[in-house]
Length: 223
Image 1 (cartoon, helix red, strand yellow):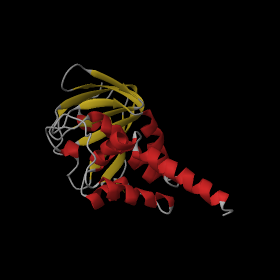
Image 2 (tube, helix red, strand yellow):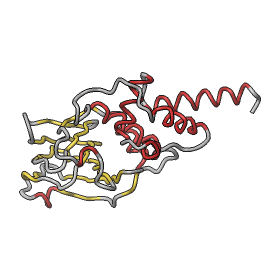
Image 3 (cartoon, helix red, strand yellow):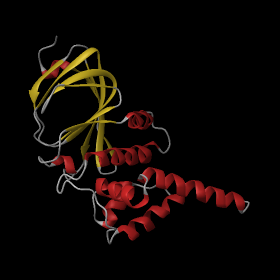
Image 4 (tube, rainbow, N blue to C red):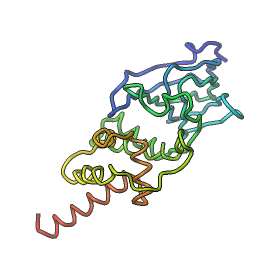
């Protein structure tokens, strides 16, 4: 076993910007140990490969590929990496205004296997990967719930029709969930949550449906 947080880290990539977020890849050594520590800002950590055990609030959590942990600002945690080490992607807000930058946001592990595929495509610089990754991430975070009220949004907000108008542009250009959320004055997680409640689907599913419909109409017109 390695005995320091620094020794547990094998390599760290540069940060890259993804809408209102920053992402980077971190590889941890086999058997590496990170003692109890915390971060000033909130962090999302997605396991791409390998495994780890994390001690924080509640029982020890064992994580493998497809696991995503939401760590609010100031959350204490300690990690032990498995015999294959771990390949992970860290996500932080670019402006310190993400919900998980709040100390009251819930610490939670989520299952996000589709997000792994999106992130791998992003780091391989495949076309459209940034947009798909951002959409999938906000959809996954909708599982966490509302940290302020603890309830789900049911009413149609006043800004919803404006958001739909902006999402309709997806048939003609690339769409950023964060960009749409900024235009209507809400956070991307809140936009994803309202979309699921109002339309019964995720933002990503809605955009895909509109693009398929636009393509079908263009084909029908001989375009």
